[in-house]
Length: 349
Ligand code: XIL
Image (cartoon, rainbow, N blue to C red; front, side, top):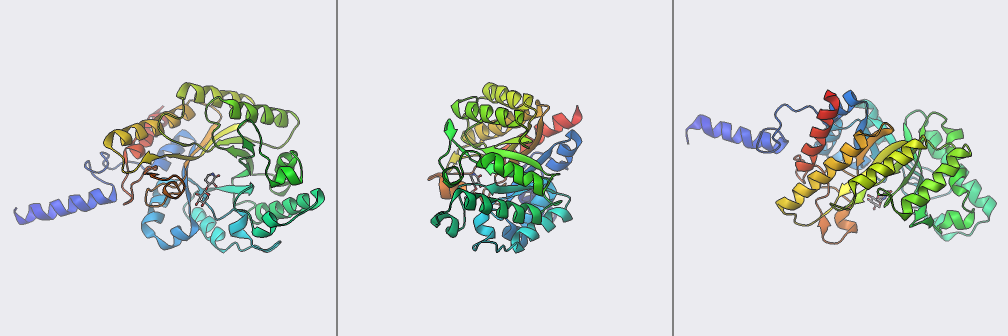
């Protein structure tokens, strides 16, 4: 091979590794996702880790380049923030928020009221209803107060439903079903400008769980509880979301006056995936974003992580993985290109 050709070949391989060039991405000089999303007036983003942003420059570069909203994957949760009642360590959370501010990225807070990843003293303690309410108020005041003005929207209550009924978690047992509206009321007092969301999984299609959430939120909205939006987590396998049903579902929640968010999308595959699997995955990403873009109440589309290098899926679903839009070497996958195409079309309209 002549010398010059060799250098070009090396360059092409290196550029491909960075995600440029037809071989890796089929999109020379492509606009980042966030640029297209901005033109369309929506947010596009992912869950990220504060520690990873600080220690992995490739990871941080993708976030800064592609996204205009991020959700802290774990750093804002009660357990990670606080081990003792009233004592909080915001070091990592604040670093994440500073990174976002520096790059013009909105922060989606996750989450104030949940049954999981709690400090031990709450899980192991016994409290009266009054004490539980005081604990909830102290926590929301501390955390939403700390981030006031820096967090655009909060998942105030996460996963309160189990199938078609309110989950019997420690908040429901300790306070009663009104803990949900208490949470929203306190969050609104503490940060009146933040958008306040209810977030859950398995409610993407019209099904008994989404019916129950719909009835619950309809009643709450009618009674003036400050709930501004619904987050669909969307941890799915290809085919799990029935597009027609998903669209009907988005429409009915939108008609309640609620904003619509996809908050934690990932499309897990059996590892290692075949080309056909990856194609179905890309189609799934495309269908979900397209359905959202057709809905006037739609505000933000977020994946749970963005690279197969760092994803909760292999640790939580045995034998599954490859769920995200960048591969383990930060190369855009077909799923990335699918989102890019959707946004490009929407931005051009
Ligand atoms: C997950 C994180 O991704 C993991 O790192 C952690 O070990 C457990 O929690 N629904 C949610 C998220 O609302 O908070 C969960 O995040 C994934 C499911």
